Every structure is written in structure tokens, then in C-alpha cells.
Length: 383
Image 1 (cartoon, rainbow, N blue to C red):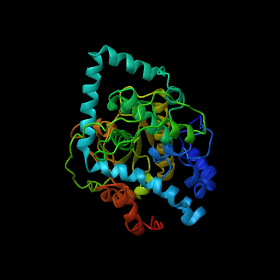
Image 2 (cartoon, rainbow, N blue to C red; image 1 turned 135 degrees about the vertical axis):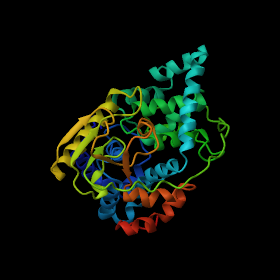
Image 3 (cartoon, helix red, strand yellow; image 1 turned 90 degrees about the vertical axis):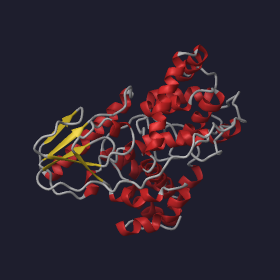
């Protein structure tokens, strides 16, 4: 997909187009990265990230069309909820990443060799054909196949010997689907920090196979050791969400979750769309998608509720109206909210059901998802 139209209509159109491939075809071909226009994966992540389309909608669409054959597609949708829930219960991991990024940026300023390696990587001048092509695609289109993201992160860490935090920051700034939970935890997993001692090494043969010969990389470090484990962090159950204020309120639509309709709200007096990205240095493509997604959701909310709509670049000044918003997840946008800001945050029922399961590995979420989601009327097979 060369273009990302940040509207719900575009999300639904893409989902409908990919629906025939959500079954056995997806299971067989999802690991193949054979170009932007290939249908081996859905490429729905930009819209799903902003909840212009929801996990529930995709799960139900896949199961309606393919039944049990959609198990792998459903499982991959659940991964997003696993990562979100895992980080919500361990916000210190995000805090460590932010601190580590600052330390890595300081280290670059003092190490000429590191400066050169980083500049070559970011400019696509490493001489590793696949990596240089992925950098170009990232800069041009703001998206990479998930398998390419894993290969990229592995080469960045183990072959180029660059701090993983700098690579994670690059992704978060450039990707139109950039997500603090999925991005941070995926980079940590590749590095061997998410699951102690388990890391991911990109291998030339694997890249050749799953790109169907598009790339033939040389010089990869296929023997690298996991990065030193940085220690466990305390886990706290995810917050339950705030109480709905009584009286008139303004619905605040933001980039973390524009899926207001899942909250089943009474009509607000006003809709306010906040186009803040939350991340300094985000690419023009990422910012444009956020702004468009917020504007689209705010316009739809205003039409549904029959109320005025206002678009603002940052958090609005408190007024006589209570401020209500979908939940802000751990990450840069939440960090941008001023201390003491009077914003009531409401949890999406899907998140409330799934996030508490993310206490260990993904298997626990996968094995218990059916029971957790059944009360919401989401019927999925045992995975």
C-alpha cells in the first residue's frame, strides 16, 4: 500500500479487500515480504493503531468468512492486545526505554565511530541490500512488513552494533502505525530483553526465502548473543478506567484511540479532536495520518451525536464542560498530558477483557481469549 488514507471508510475498504485472504491463505503466506502491493498480510495496522477500525471488527470479519481457518489471523490480532496489556501493567519498561534513548543519544554525541555507523544506517548506506531497501521504504511509505521489522531490528542490533533504543525511536517516528507497546516490546524481544535469553537473529537464508529472492544479504552476524538482561519490573494490574462524569461533557478524540463508538456514550455537548502526536520529530507522514484520523473520527462523532466539532493541536484548556476521552495507553501521547489535567479516561470493553491476561507470555492470552471475550459477544474458537 503506497498511500494511507486516514479515514474509517478507507479502513473498511481495505478490510473488505483483504477479507478473502484472512483464512488459510494468510496462515500460509503471512511471513512472506514480497513487496508493498502483495496481499500476504492485511496492511491494516495504520488504521487499527488509531482504531479507525477495531480488533473486534477484524476478528468477526475473519471468522465470518473463514471459520476455524481464520485462527492464525485472529491470533495475530490478539498479539496487539497482548503487547498493549503487557506494557500497561509494566509502565516502567517504557520509562526505561525513554531513559535508555536519552543515554544512547548522549553516547552518540561522544563517539565518532558510532556517529558514522548510525549515519550510514539511517541513510541506507550499509551495503546490506535488504536493510538499505527497508530504510528507503520506511522513509517513503512509513510502513514495513512485520517480518522485515524483525530482520531490520536484528541487523541494527547484532550486525551494525547500534543501540536498540535508537532503532526503536526511528521506527516510532517514521511508521504511520507507530505504537509504543508493539514497537518497544518487539525491539526488546529481538534484543533478548523481553523474554530472558531469547533473542532473534536475522539469517541470510531466511531473508532470501521469505522475500522470494528479492534480497541476498551478506555480512550478517548470525551468531550474536542476547543483550544483557536489564532485570524484571514490578507488575500492577491495569487501571479500571475513570468514572463517567455527571452533567454536560466534551468528548475528546485523540490519536491513541479514536474508537469512541465502543464506549456507548450519551451524547456530548461538544466533540474536540486533539491532533497531537506526542512524539518530537515524528515524520510528516506519521503526523499527517494522526491529524487525518483524528479529524475523521471527530467529524463522525459530531454527525452521530449532533453536536459542534472543534479541532485543536494540543490538549484543550479546561472549561465548564467535563472532558472525557478513550483511554490513553502508556507511551508518548500519555506523557504529553499535563500533570493534574482533568481528563476522565474510559476503557474500551475489549481492552478491559484482554489486557489483564497479559501477565506472562502470549500463550496465556491466546489460550484464555475465548473465555475473556465471550461476555462481549465475541465468539472465537479455542486457539
